[in-house]
Every structure is written in structure tokens, then in C-alpha cells.
Length: 170
Image (cartoon, rainbow, N blue to C red; front, top):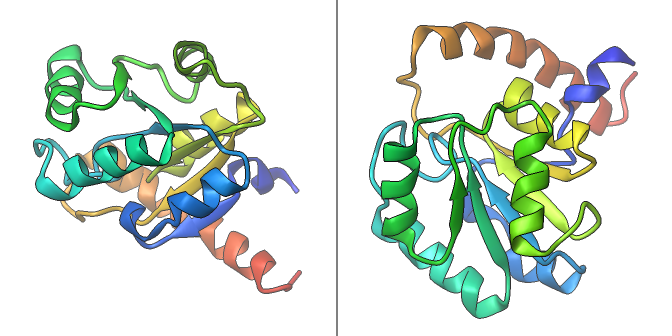
């Protein structure tokens, strides 16, 4: 099916609901994160919850990278706030290059890396194109730029088929 190229490997209501210890036990060693509406509301600085998450991930033994289409000022300030991660700005998702660069910097590969983001047509599709497993999380904040709001309408249609397939429907 054409739409399957946009289907995530897994779905969670929040990044903070993911069992990262179980991912580590399954062999995952690298995590690539989107920032806006994945870790914090769009444009928000690193908060205590995100800082605690990256500290926990470091303690587990995970290597982490931020991959964002945003400008360096935004991505760098967030990375400095959470401390335990590298970053790539203007990542040009869904192009594969940023994903490959992130894995190279972490010393991981497509077999032991997972991408976590909130958008199907940039985050998930880009991860699939790079051969990386993806986790889609529900957006944190409904307040978004108009081009993202319009993409969300199409994403909701794709998600309808994704959830239908997960339940075993055809």
C-alpha cells in the first residue's frame, strides 16, 4: 500500500511514555529526536522533564542526537539545555542525509537506531527512507504554523489507515 511509507513502527501519546529501558534491552543504542512538539511545545526551551529524560537516557547508555529542520539558534539552545546530546540543524527532513549524519556522529547504524518525532511526512517518512525504525508521538501543542496545520489534516487521514491496519482491519 502506498500509505505504508508514512506508517511509523510504533506510536505513543507522548515521548515521555516510551519505555527507553526496553528499547535498550532490545539492542537500540542510538536515539534521534525531533524537538518541537516532540519534546516540548513549539519554540519552547528545554524544560525539567526534557532535561531529566536526556540525563536518564545517558545513564541507560543511549547515545542521542537532535535532528531538526529549524535554525541553529533554536536547536543549539535546546541542545545546550538538555546537555547530553549532539544536534543537527536545518536537517532537511525528510531527506536522508541528516539521519545518516546523526548515526555517524553517534557511532550507530540503521539496525540499532530509532527516530522519535511528531510528524509523519517529515520525521517518520525521513526515518523510513534512511532505513531507521520510527516512533511517532502525538504532538504536544495544537498551536502550530499554518503549513503544519494543513499537513496535519493529511496526516490524520494516513493515521486513520495506520490504526485500522494495526487493529487487523483491511
